[in-house]
Image 1 (tube, rainbow, N blue to C red):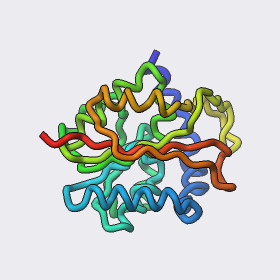
Image 2: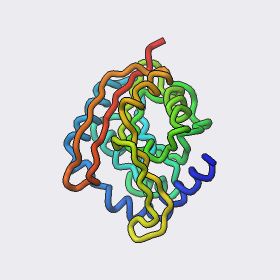
Image 3: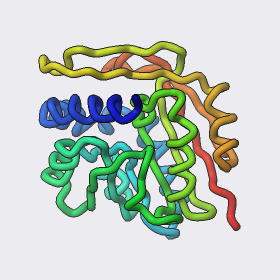
Image 4: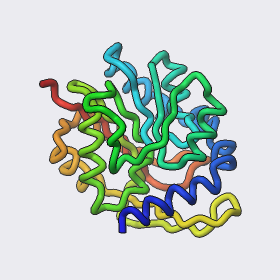
Length: 215
């Protein structure tokens, strides 16, 4: 069931939150393409409002958005990840939440959403629901930046940072993702893929920029 899967994902990240935060806190320093894409997101959003780091983990993406001058916040499924983010970046608002049901977030709440590898823990049957929620909370003319691993596989981890977890890393084909975004109501602006950096897991990655049409 989706609820059980989401709970096991949250519990797994709770178990490794401190180690994960230490490992990835400075990842923007060796990812120039990611920095460029976040700069593009900030440029497209402009002064419209807040950019939400959806699936923020320990907050490194939100922190980089803040560094670029954007008003940023973060939402994550794992309460312990939120705790780590708040500890590291006290000037940024972080909250616990599930992108499948963001009932605490108002319609049209954000001018931008950066969903960096957060959908890799959304099971494929639940993906339309997640994209629909992201569309709902994005204001008209707002931008969604969505990233994921490209492919058809599901990688399972029973151990992460030498701690027990139960995590699936779900890959997506861009040809499958584009129609789902369009069905959710988005119009596409950018579709880019890149190979891995040496420091990363050796997978191909996609970066999509989608716009919620102005009313």
